[in-house]
Length: 79
Image (cartoon, rainbow, N blue to C red; front, side):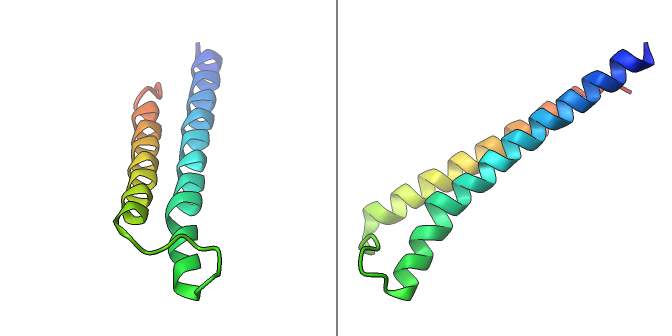
């Protein structure tokens, strides 16, 4: 019984970690990178306009959702 529970818990933690890692990638790709490019004045950076901020917010909200899903997955850990 303990072995099955331990395996389940480890698989649950791996799934939560994977979701959180994807969330971090979303933050870096869609939020940090455009803001950094704009702040450093990179030539091909997206122009600073409402649409840019909107899409950065969408990426950030998606990352928050993925992180939240990872936290929800952890609730299925068996004691």
